[in-house]
Amino acid sequence: MGSANKAGQLTEISEQFLWFLTRAAGIVSWFAAALSVLAGLLMATRFLGRKPTIPYLLDIHRFLAHLAVIFLGIHMITLWADSFVDVGLVELTVPGVLKIRGYDTVALGVGVIAAWIMVLVELTSLLKDRMPKTYWNAIHLNSYLVVILGTWHGVVAGSDATNRLLVGLAVTVLATITVITVVRAARLIMPTGGTPDQGATSARRPGQMPSPMVGGQGPRSLPAEANSGRAVRHQPQARLRR
Image (cartoon, rainbow, N blue to C red; front, top):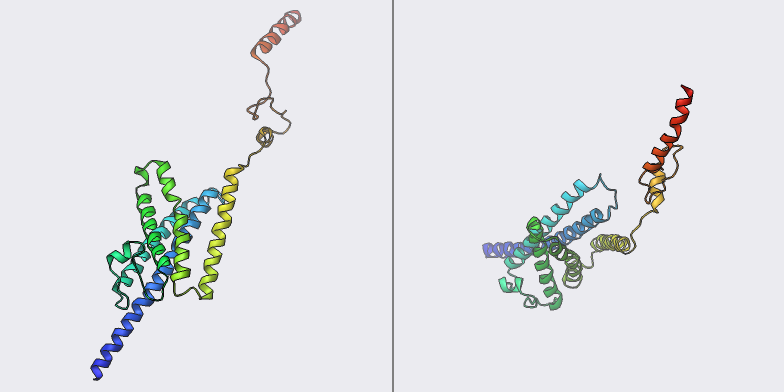
């Protein structure tokens, strides 16, 4: 009797452990994906400066993207291994098939769609050098969809949507992504640029006259004919002085 009770307790503990691991892996995957998008936006907008931030931001962006996919795999494997729910390969890969009692079926399907998009973005990122840039950019923009659909999945179907700490962190990350996205869109729509004379004024030496050329390409100069004429007019004076 005692051994049977111990076996039952161990089974219950292992099931609880898998369930907690499934939830934790899903949370880490979402945060890694969202922070990866945030790092990519910081690079694209030069929000933190130009030269000092690009090297390590690119590494962080890639690391977080890899981390998101790894924990997505853990999230799905532990859900498949959990005996409390009847989940197979079809349920994990086909949207709308997964059904768990007490959980919204649409939100579960949205999670499957977000997983597929995340994998697609990651694979195309690894093949970036072999793809046309236009196609790669179009696919890479779907990273926004990963965050949006992942948020829907976590809020509606997740078990930690009532955790104030997690919700506060998620709202902070999403708000930051939204603000920087708006800034980037505004810069693309209304690019900032100075007037042509501003560059010339900043690069002008003290006492130098503004350039009459468009964009301030050089100091004021006379045509070659005027210079040659001036030289000819000075020649008779030089002969009289002899």
